[in-house]
Length: 623
Image (cartoon, rainbow, N blue to C red; front, side, top):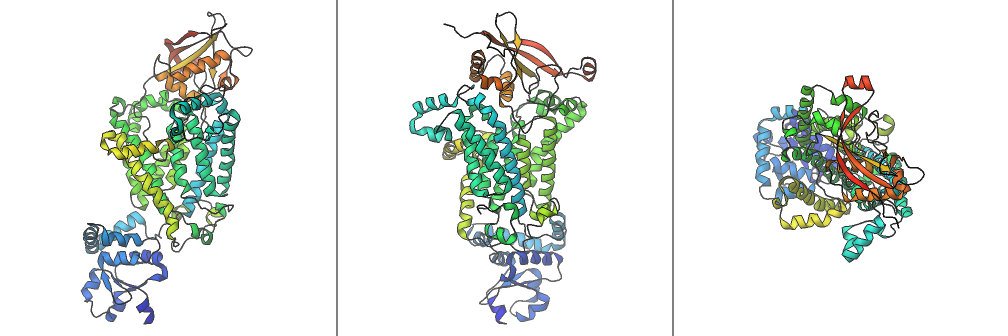
């Protein structure tokens, strides 16, 4: 009897399967802090409560004799579960929260058989409170692979892109910014290159990123390593200027920033060796897991929204994919075959894209089984994209974010036993001291409103958000911790390609080649990802502007006239190996895939026709 007086007791309907399942779930949350008993056994101990009230609602008897029922009893029970006390605060103090929840409770209690079937459909017969130790383990390993691909891909390209003799030397750029901006330069351009803009230091940053990515892959000092990785990639992204302006660069920075607050901060302890008793002191933050899901939602959903908002006729009449495989920056060999699929299949596939980008993301915040469906569909979508186009590390990074839709119970069926055995199932979530929650709450307080502002601005313009929100987003923008997304808003229906040529006499011209661009007609598409040839990508964007070369293209032509070895290293073919040419120019061609018959007859993957002179013949002034 003394135990009953000191321990809260939940009294429920033992004949109701929905009630029994709910109580079993609550028991795993609260552990020994709360006792549970059916009213059929203990109702006689509480004569002050009529029997019909026990039949209609759950009751909680707390020390001191206080008895609550309905939604209030549910929230007071959850207050005894670690990390759930804030729910009772909402019930007590948030306007409108109490009546809404009491109404919902009465609705569910009055239709328990129906909601029991709903529970079985969405959550399954046996469902434990979700834990995310395996989720964190897998997400961080995939993130490590993404970081490794990003740094290793960029490392050899740095001298030619932003080095001292590269296309856009960062040393010159920083000198100009320092002269114009003064102390504000450190905020506007957050990069370690301010310390030393030389080639050796920039390559050191990339090399350090490779080494730290391997440490993260091994689970060594994950928290500090993630801080360093984020700072290094932010530095290189800022220094990279237009060559590191892709959405997946920004996505990696935002995901990497959130991962800092998800990772275990146990230095020199490999995360893959963690047991529940070791990991329970630093359990994954559910709030950060939710923020990563929110990031995935924005990435996918906004990509669908911008396609409609752009007004592009090819997305609206479902013909976009009839052009996409041919006109995308770097198609794969399978992209050639996908392009020749029947028109009805292409239109159905375009409709499928809208379903995957506008409907499926809503499942991200749905009950457990619908989240799993969303995970499977989005992962499959990314695999299809990767099979038909080379998009660097974007697909793998998106798949890593999809992992956050799963919990440990699901991953135990997907991962090898030698991995899952190191993570014993958690009976109940470990208690977190308040100071362990502060970082996650703080980052959510910053990232969530800023990301909402970015999403609203991309959909409805800056006028849709308050001025202070737009100013805050602008201030934080250089750090890329909350960004807007939207891929392929407008479908390109032609494939212009720039052919750069050199000559010593102005009459006989020889073509420069690129490593991965389809310039030679007989050269088929290749497999490049997760490596990203950043000059090749920028050449694709430059061609879309017609005969209006971007500023960096002029610098590229100057470097070719100078015979810059770092820049020539970015190319696949140098027709002037002994000395640079006297003249360079660029021509614009329209490329398209050959048909099956044309390929059988000629062996060519491409055909082309001349459009115009993209860049006239120029020469360096010789004195």
